[in-house]
Image 1 (cartoon, rainbow, N blue to C red):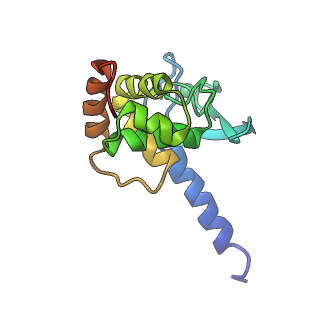
Image 2: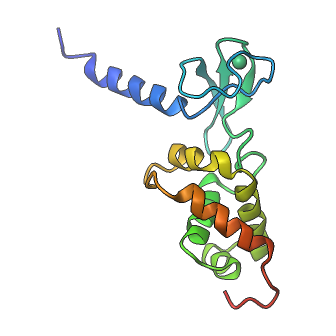
Length: 158
Ligand SMILES: [Zn+2]
C-alpha cells in the first residue's frame, strides 16, 4: 500500500516550495506581486538552463521565471551570473572577478549594478536559484557592493 507515493509526494512538495519564490508579473492580476501562494505553475521548460515557463492560475498569463530578474535576457549561464554575484559579495574586485570567471570586467560591473537595482528581490532569487546560499545578509551586502560598483575607479587593482 505505502510503497509508491512518499517519494512523489516529497518531490511535488519541493517544487511547490520553490514556486513560492515567484509571483505573478501581470499588473492587472489580483495576485500581482504576491509570493508564497499556490497560483504559480510550471507550463514548460526551454533553453540551455531548462528555464521554466511559468503561468498564473488566476489570470492565465505566462512568463519566464527569469523575467524581472537579473537573469532575464542574460547571455551568460545562470550559474555564471550567480558566481559573479558571489565573488563580488565575497569582496573581490570587478577585475579579479572577471579574471577568475573569464568574463569581461565591464560585464561584472554591469551585473553588479543590475543586482543593485534588483536588490529588493535579489535575496529571494539567490535563495531560489542557489540553495547553498545562506539566507542572511546577501541582500544587504549586494546592495552595498553595488553602490561601490557605481563609483569604481579606472586602474583599480582588484
Ligand atoms: Zn496572475
